Length: 356
Image 1 (tube, rainbow, N blue to C red):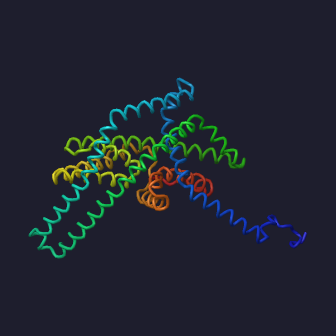
Image 2: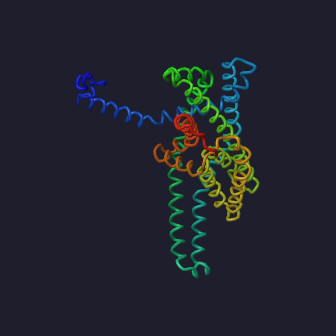
Image 3: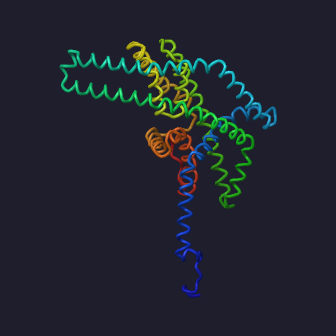
C-alpha cells in the first residue's frame, strides 16, 4: 500500500477547527488546575495526616477491627483537643495578646539602641557607620510594621482554616481506613505491563513517607519542648506560645527553624537587652542540639535530602503556591525523589540509586 493511501491515525488532528478546540480545552484544564491548586495541596496534606494516623491505627488494628481503630483514634484526638482547649488555649491566647503588645515595645527599644549607638564615640570613629546604622534602623522599623500589618490577616486565616482542618482530619481518617481500596483504584488505570512498577513505586512512596513523617514528628516534639523549656528557664514571657511556634515551624526544615526564632527574639528584646541575649542563646543551643543530636540520631533512618536542593525546591513551591507550597515542599520532594529514582533512574536508565 502506498504511503499516500494510508489513513491517518488521528484524522481530526488534520482539521484546524479540531486543533483549535483541543488547544482551548487544554488551556481550560490547565487554567482550572492552576486555580484549584489549593485543593490538590490540601489533598496531599490529607495524605500526610493519614500517614501520621497510620502509626496508631496499625497498632490498634492488631487487637480490633480497623474501622473501630480509626473511630478510637478520632475519639482520642477529639478528647485531647477539647482538653487542650480547656487547659492550654486560655494560656496561649493570653500569651498571644502579650506577644502582640510586645512588638511595639521591641520597636521602640530597638530605636533607642540605634539612637544611642549612633551618638556613641565608638560609632563616630568608624567610617560609614552612621549611614549603616540609619539604614538598619529604617529597615527594622519597616519590618516590624509589616509584622503588625500581617497579624490581623493571620488571625482571620487561623479562624477560617479551622474548618479546613476538620475536613482534613476526617478525609485522612477515610484514607487510613481503607488504603488498599485507593491503591486498587489507581492500579486499575495503569496498563497491565506496568502494574509491577506501580506496585513497587506505591510501596516505596509509602515507606519513604512513613520514615520521613516519623522522623519529623520526633524532631518537632524535641525542638518545641526544648525551646519552650529553655525560654521559660531564662525568663522569656510567652514561652509556651513560642515553643508551639517552634514545634510547628520545624515541619519546614531550615526555613522554619530560622523564622520560628524571630518572635522569641522580639519578646526578649521588648523585655531587656539581657533577655534578648538569653533568648538568642536558647535558640542557638536548641539548633546546635538539632544539628548534632536530632539530625544524626532521630533523622538517621528517615529520608535524607541535600540542603541546597531542598531549599531551592522550597523557594520554588513557595514562589508558585505561597505559604502552603512551602509547607508541603519537603514531603512532596520525598515523593518526587522516590518515584524518579525507581521509575527513571533504576528502571529506565538501569542504574543504581545514588547513596545519600
